[in-house]
Length: 300
Image (cartoon, rainbow, N blue to C red; front, side):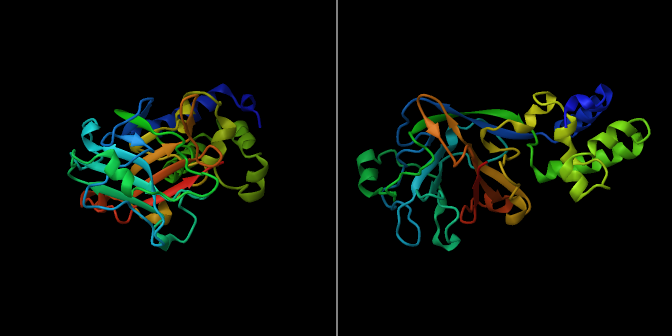
């Protein structure tokens, strides 16, 4: 269905209604920027060589296969924020370097891990780490981070994203109320919105809902914020398929998100231009317990 079939007034009111929901539910996030320089052992990075204390071994799964560093966050490099309770140390994210990026195999194998070191021993050398860091890899290298890069951080406001279940729930309620209050004024527009083939087949008698947004609202307009993707800490997560948070637990914090990203100097690829998320229960984050982090990635 073409957007121009709807009256301008109807489209604008729906857009304004949705923007009001978006603006009232912004969250703080730490936006992560790729810096095209080689980081040292202790700096924040995507990929590359992790810091490993002298008295620790490199992480492995339960079969003894070495995990590879996906990201390392030096907490002292972060701007002041209300997301991470830690004020110092390193937070590291490891996954198994296989075709499924360590996700779709037996979950009991421990194919991904998040490790926090509160104190950093600056006397550790790269040679010492290289001697014990031996990540597994298959004949075809599937690791999403093609080249080690440094990263930097800044604070931004995060808005709901397309596919967020919490946004969908709020939009459904607001659009149903809008229809009830405007069913005579916008009768023709509302009827047009319900002519989508899938809608007519699956839920023809339902009021206006989240499903109808893509038919009603202009592409590339004010609602484009729903489709912005970031490397980020905290805020509203992005998914290319479905919101998976309900499968894990309520009250989750987005511990880290890494999107597909590339140019001439570096490349991060999750399947077919996908995105990865790490979530943690709020109570676990407060206790600095990273043993039960939830990891997900999906793609188109």
